Amino acid sequence: DALSLVLSGSVADFQPLIDALPAAAGIDASGAIDIRVRASGPFDKPDVRADVSLADGTFEVEAIPSVREIALQATYADGVLGLTRAHAAWQGATLDVSGTLPLAVLGDLVPESYRQSLPPTPGPARAAVTITSVTPLVLAPFLDAATVSQIVGRFDVTASVEADGPTVGQVRADVTLDRAELELSRVPLQQARPTRLRLADGRLDVVEWTWTGPGSHLAVLGGAALGEGTPTLDLNVTADLDLRMVSAFLPDVATSGRLRLDLEASGTATDPSIEGDVSIAGAGIIVRDPRVGITDL
Image (cartoon, rainbow, N blue to C red; front, side):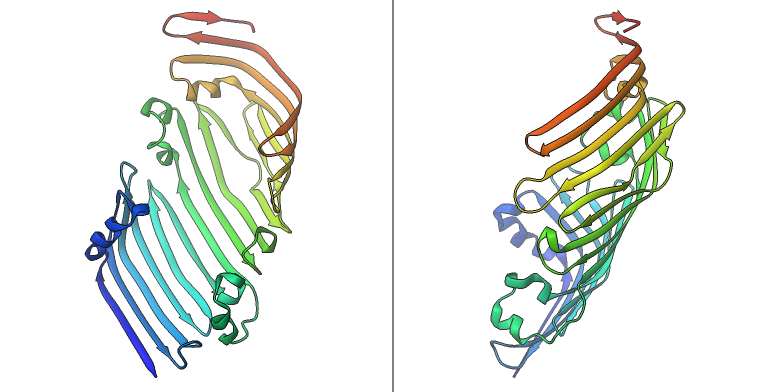
């Protein structure tokens, strides 16, 4: 008539099981986990209820810095997964997620016999996502230290997501960069207004993307269709930038001058068509070793 399962202890206790999974090679995890599941009723249509919590978790993959401060609180009842809190920190950045997921939204991903036993669940799946304090530290595992030292900035992102099903066309999302500050080789660039992206009806659109700095300007318009098959582009990028920014990614090269461009991208993401105008004025390039200089380009 009823079956209860209680799993409580340390994630590290399951490390031998994690190591035995081919896809989990090189993964180390720790934390305090508590899972309580109760199932009652017919075997083919059980009433399942669960509470899951994880505290003080860490997750590390080989040479990549570990994800820390992992915490999770979730419940499941009446066909709805409720995520009270999911939190993680990596390289100074933090991620927080909360929301609800009716299993009916997953469609055929849930066995039909169990899906038919679920009570009606009004409304779509919903999630609120917050990412804060994204700094150049997140680039440190992938770029050399000299390049990272030339990049300064901070980004904070919030997103709200709704989904009526598991496909891209059934997902709606609004993403906002509440804070976007960037400095490349001491040349600042920041958003004039909060940058906003919107996903709806299988299309990702740029609602607002205007970044400015002393004598610099970057604007993006358009979007991309993300339906079935390869995504198709419809983007326009205009910019007037200080070429000193390029030096951030070329530590042994000093650059100067202005870059102006007005480009349109169309076609598929794998085979795009890019047309427009690009101009460079008063540019200088100095290579330190061997010492080569080009001026007035």
